[in-house]
Length: 257
View 1: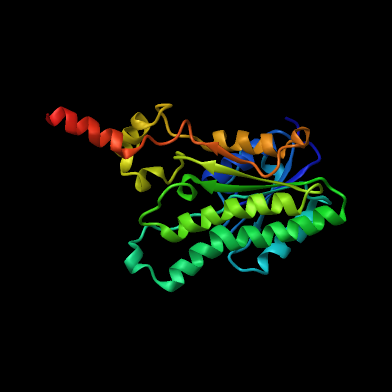
View 2: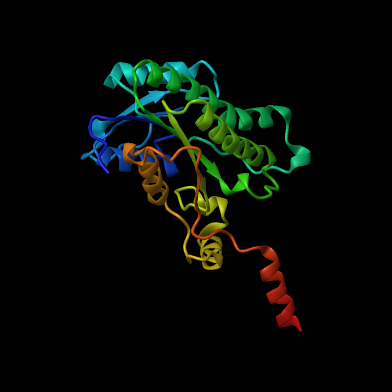
């Protein structure tokens, strides 16, 4: 897939899944605008000139228009917006403060809405048949104990996706990716170290966790203008899913006799 002379915005594009997405699009010719609250680590010399960083806190509503306008000012156009930035600390639901809940919802749900609105306006005005891709999570489609606000926001993002795909067609396509367990630089601390990650990987159908590149390839498919009839899709990139816990419990009970 070729993205030469195309401009892509990737929120949170400097690390984790976002860094993988940024790298893939830049290697395939796109100018990539990334944003975050701090300067990212340098990218490979082969692509560093294709990547442009904007310091912004996307939880602030006014940041959306600023990021989109900066992208257009830098490259002259906008073809794809990838709402990747997200996350939230694990916390017992009974202890989650209103401030924390509001911040998690702002990052994972409100920011993608505001950015999508700003991107759509520019794409429509410039007659660009653009693409918006929302990075959701398996937390949107199953229970999410310990991260209720995050799971609820990611579930809401799927509804945003299907609703905007219908409302903004045919000018702009809107799709989502439901990401499974993805290995990034933060995985060891999140999943209990290398042993925890190996245990998780062995329990998955594909016998490995996903990688940022797996998500990047799905993004390139959805962004490719050749796939012009793909809109409103919620693409699961999770290697077959997570086996239900009752199977493990039943297996252990059988061993105990």
